[in-house]
Image (cartoon, rainbow, N blue to C red; front, side):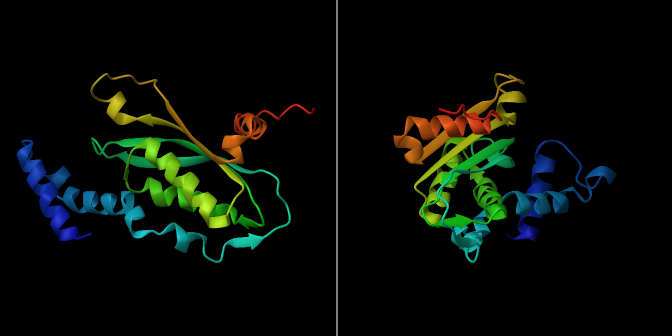
Length: 191
């Protein structure tokens, strides 16, 4: 990203909306906005394959592995306003498990791009499945969208939930049900 170009664009935006970019409170705003956008769009410079490289480990277990409540911050591609919430990722490995922090990094890799929550959910599931050749993957996201809260219909309490289920999470009702119960914080009943 070209910081100088972004700073110039922000300066022009400030002028266009009727502000004085030279007033005290705004003098450093173009620089700060450029830095913020570099952070919020850093996913374009990330590759999920590079993230999981050297973090996949052989394991004999084929039990469900879940990482709940991963914080998600992204920008809506339609309005470039933030959406934020939680992501829950579960997978059943075939012979390989992923280092736990790498699951969260894969989430960030895709979230730090201009996004739609629906696509983001599917991208995370696909990346986790392909990185460890998982038997199944489930991803559920629950997010609040500022484009819904601050403008348009102005519904402050709405939460969008999306899911992507692949492999055994899709084909087995029992597996999917266990995953949904576990991300809800409840233990599955024993048979």
